[in-house]
Image 1 (cartoon, rainbow, N blue to C red):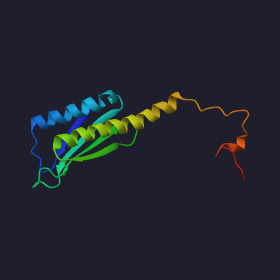
Image 2 (image 1 turned 180 degrees about the horizontal axis):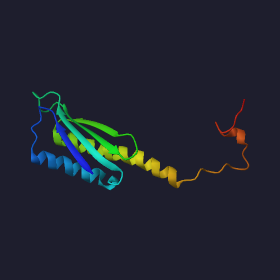
Image 3 (image 1 turned 60 degrees about the vertical axis):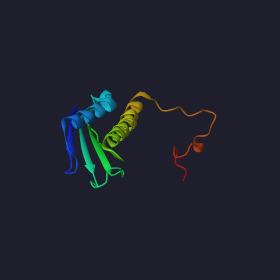
Image 4 (image 1 turned 45 degrees about the horizontal axis):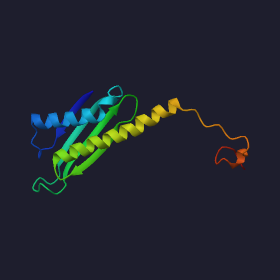
Length: 128
């Protein structure tokens, strides 16, 4: 899985920040390594004058093989917290989208009860 990190001109990018982002992403979504090709991380501070106003943002975009990208946003009072929040959101989003795909492949539709009239099932029959 490839992880690309981008910052705006208000963020001082350094090796420690890159390692923090990589660790957060890999620990959150490492198990999806077979499905996720690339993760783009965008870090920003919308109001660089103030430090504690919640304007530190992190956007993560996961490129999933064969599907639309999964994008999450997080804002917090400091950059590290926004990175952690975005990684958690990305994990939940991938759990939801990839888990749903796996469930479709494993489950069979529930059979209709024989003692209930087919008309009582919403949307399953044409009742003109």
